[in-house]
Image (cartoon, rainbow, N blue to C red; front, top):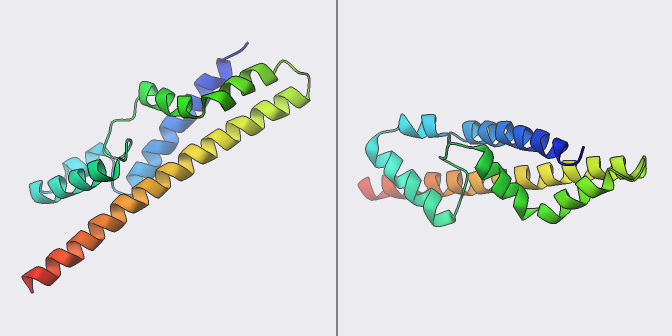
Length: 129
């Protein structure tokens, strides 16, 4: 059935993005626990860098929007499954490539947020010394 595996891709991406956010301390729950000043600084950094996924509650709709960014590949994957053997291998490869691309991109974005936050903290410490 065409499109069934896209639901599985969305579920996997939900878990992956949530895990990445937690590893970087950027999940909504982790940010909510910060003091007000730190929270504000972090949210300004997230916004300024255009990170769409840090600090957000990750929903199926949000992941679907991300998958639309690689939509051509996903569409090709759905069609490719109908070609025996090679089509299924191609669909699996496209699924893996899409997941890897989106996961790697999010890691890079979270790294940039964390790096800028640390640099801001260091600059703030120098000013107070």
